[in-house]
Length: 221
Image (tube, rainbow, N blue to C red):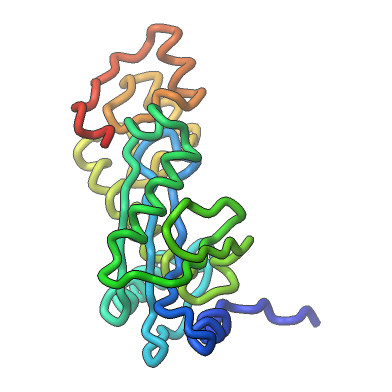
């Protein structure tokens, strides 16, 4: 019988607390790959006495589970969100936009962390100790919490964009490059929430088939 998969726990943060590296923040982001919508980054500082039960990598949870945990996390932890809109992604590239959003999320926390735990292997430049953990959203409680809050926030945002821009199906594919999304791009053109630097959108622009709605200048900030 296969061993049960390890779930995220608070051991990494607990060790940091014992070493005096407090507060400890977990950081994750969602939305690097889609053709539309922002990258959403989240920073979370969990209360050691109220670590939510059931935390996991957001991709391993159902939408119902994510929504329930989102409410618990926001009620018991310090949470900060930051958004890198398509204009910033197009103007700086996806990596730089992601790092910017992660750093901004950390800066937005009510407290100043002494240690930041980031999912992946490419941590943002911030003014405190940073530890990158590959697969951190499936190992570290605070990173898992950040992944859940970022995912639920972005999904809600894309659902609202689906209502504002009917026909694209944002509420179903969340901006990712699905057949439905490709067909909508061909039929409707791009809206201001599309990333013009991403190949599928850029290629259609080059073909002259998209009537692009240009974003307001402040959207790039």
